Image 1 (cartoon, rainbow, N blue to C red):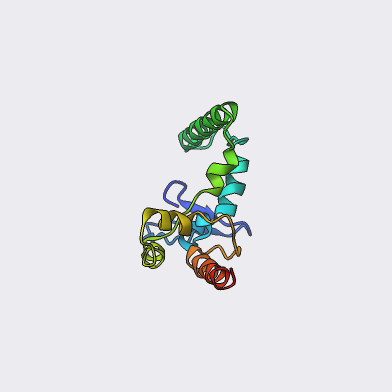
Image 2 (image 1 turned 90 degrees about the horizontal axis):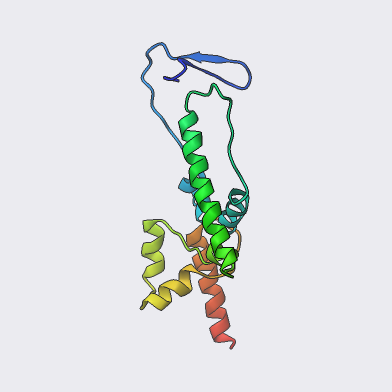
Length: 150
C-alpha cells in the first residue's frame, strides 16, 4: 500500500492509503506447520529445481526477483552436483524433520539420545496431517502397537 499508495483488489475495489496506520497481519503455511511437512517440501523442491521467476520489466522490486532467481540457480547447480556424484536428491528431502520449539519440546521429552531424536524426526511415513506434533503422536502409537505385537 505504501509503495503504490493504494491496493487494487481482484474485484476492482481500490483501497487508498490516505496516510492510514498500516498493521500487517500474516498467516502463512509456515505458521500453520504445513511447510514442516516433508511431502509438501518434496513437492516444492521438485518444482524449484526446474524453475525461474519472471516479472514485468517495469516491476519496481525487480531486484528481489533477480535475487530469488540467483538463489534458485544456486539450488539447481548444487542439485546437479549431487546427482552427478551419484547422490539421490530425494533422500535429502525425505530425511527432513522440522518442528516448532513447542513441538520439539514435546517430541524430545521422550528422547534419551541423539539416535532417538533422529528416529522421531526422520520417519519416512506420514498420516498427511501437516502437523508434526500430531504426526509424532500417531507414529508413537504405531510404534507402541508394533512393539506390543512383535
